[in-house]
Image (cartoon, rainbow over all chains, first blue to last red; front, side, top):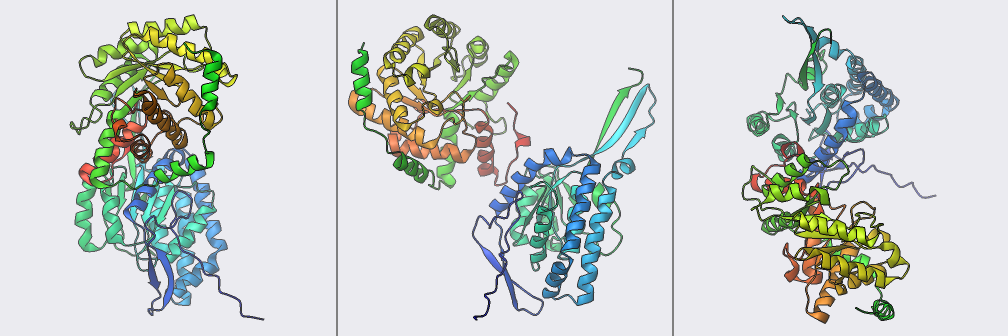
Length: 284
Length: 304
C-alpha cells in the first residue's frame, strides 16, 4: 500500500461570493514564523481590486436594505460557523507561529467579536440616531445610514485583527473590500470559507491577499469607494493614502493602537456611518 | 421588383453558415487585447458610434431632452469627449429630440413600422414612418415581418422594406432583423441579404426587446454580408448591433470584429453604430480612468 498523497488547499481570493485566482495569475510564498514554507497565496492586482469594488457595490443595495435585526442574525451565524471550525483556525494560527494557548485565545476572541458586533446591529441606530428637539412644529429625526463601499487595509493580527475591522463595517450595512495581512494571509482566506457558508450575501465581504503597498493606493484613489480604513497601512504610507482618499471625500479611519484584544467600543462602527436628518411636519 | 421564386432561389442559394466555425471565430476575435493609446482611440470611436437609445413606454419629453443633452456633451468634466452618433426614440418623441439637438450635428433616429413586433397593417407601418420623417427624424429603424420571413414569404418582407424606404425619403433606413427570433445563422445571412437588396442603408441586429439581442457571431455574419454585398454590387451598407452591449470591453470587441471582418472602411459612425443606453456611461468611466489614472464610479455620471 503506497503512502497517501497530501491534499493541499489552494489559497485563492474571495470576490463576489466566489473564490477566483488573481486575474494576474501571480502568487507569493507564505512562510511560517520560522521561515519554513507554508503555502502559496494569490497575489492580487489592481484589476482584482477593481473587480472586488464592483462586486461590493453590487451587493450594497441588498445588504444595506436588510433590517438591522437580520444583519445581526447573519453576523451571529458567522460566529456559529467559526465556532464549528475552531480547531482548524487554531491549527492555522499555530502553523503561523502562535503558541497553543495564544492561538486558542485568539480564535475565541474572534468568535466573541462577531457575537459582540452582532448584538450591536439593531442597537447602534438607537445610540447614534436621535429625535431632535426643534423650535417649530416638526418631528426632527436623525438616523444613521451606511457609508457605502468601505476599503480596508487589514492589520497584521491574522484572524482577530481582520474580524475586528470587517465586522464593524458590515454590521451597519456597508460592504467591504479588505486587503488581508501581507505576511499572514492564510487565515483570511479560511475565514472567507466561513463567510461563504454563513448566509452572508456574496460581495458583502471581499478579501484580497497580496502586497499592501501595491493594492492600498488603488483602493484609496478609487472613486467608487466611499470610505477607507487604514488600520494596517504602514506608517510611511498613511499620508499618501489619505491624500489619494481626499479626491472623492472618502471617510478615512487612521491606524489606531493596534491592540485588538481591548474592548472595541463603537468607534469603528461610527466611522462608517452617515447621518440622515428628516424634518416631518407635525399634524400632517 | 424580383419575383418570389427568384428571391427564394437567391436567398436559399447563399452558402450556409458554419455555426461552429462562426462561434469560434467570433470568440477568438473577442480575445484580442486592446490597451493604452489604442484603447483610448477605440473608446472615443465607440462613443461617436453610440445610438443613445430610450425606448420605454414610460418615456417623457423631459427624459428625451436630458438624453439629448447627454448626447451632445456626454461628460461635462471632459469637454473633449466626442458627441454620440444619434439619439434613438419612439416616433412621437422625435419632435422633442429634433428641437433639443438642433445644430448639434447629432442625428435623430426613430423606430417605426409598429416597433417592436411589427404586427400592424402595412398602411399603418407606412403612416408611422411618414410621421417620424415629417417630425424631422434623419434615420428610421424599421422592423421586418419575422412571421412572414420564417413562413418563407420573402417577397412580402422585401416589398415592405421597399415601401418603407420610399416613405423615408431622404432619411436613412435601418432594417432591424431581430436575429433573436430568426433561429439560425443561415436565416441571419438570408435576412441580411434580403434587406440589403431591398434598399436598406443599415442592417441592425435587434430591437433590444428580445433576448438574445446582439451577439458577436450574429454581428459577424452581418458584417460578412455587408462586405460581400459591396463586392457584388458596389453599394456600402452599415451594420448596427443593438441590445445587450453594456461594457467598454464588449464595445471594443465589436470594433475589432468590424476591422477584421468587414474592414477598416466600416470603422466610422456612418457605417457602424452601437445601439445602447447603459454602454455610454461605462465608456465614459473608462475614458476618465485613462485620463486621470484612478478608477471612476457610476456615482460620478448622469443616470439615464
